[in-house]
Length: 121
Length: 121
Image (cartoon, rainbow over all chains, first blue to last red; front, side, top):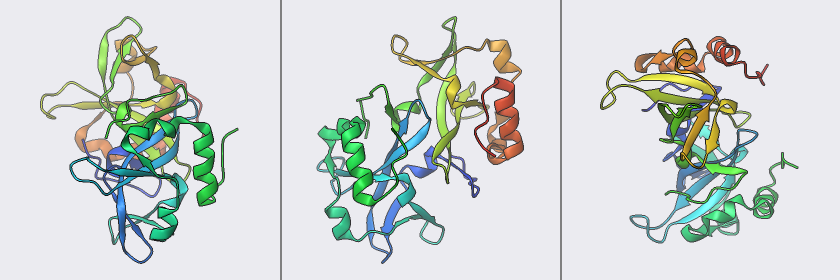
């Protein structure tokens, strides 16, 4: 099911997934693969952006704090205020390391790198 | 991409979607279709459970507060402490009404019906 309707306040997880991500210069950086959700608080911990790879092979993932993603209607995608170099230097994981996303120490690294406020303990 | 790994604190939106929902008696109620996310706060407003229908026709949807869903490993599904009658009497929408999910008044109805704390405005 796809909820086409999106208001200024609510968006469906269906719509977030596969949405393309661009930088401020309009270069495509990747696309949103999925969201990691804090079970107890019910909030989005990270958006996981995938990039590179072919048919799922060699794909890499950038976990991004949710507050880094700004939806831009013209591009029908998210815009992040990051250069390719900033992203390349940021936390990156391979498919087989995806369980690192659930490690709170790694989580802290992600938020620190992008300068987003840490909202948990 | 499917993150198989799930810890006590984090879960992937990929894993939540299509997860079956049971009541405490073990009856299958439906399955999670998607999550509605508050864009600004980055939290889950509702889980949308779908039920009935065939190939997407005649399907109906129950928006459920996130805190109603308790993951049960044995069932590999969510358990909600609601009877079928309670659900049947609860807020239900048809596919063409899905945009009601973004209406704050309707949102309040959902939270009130299930007795979940309203965390916004």
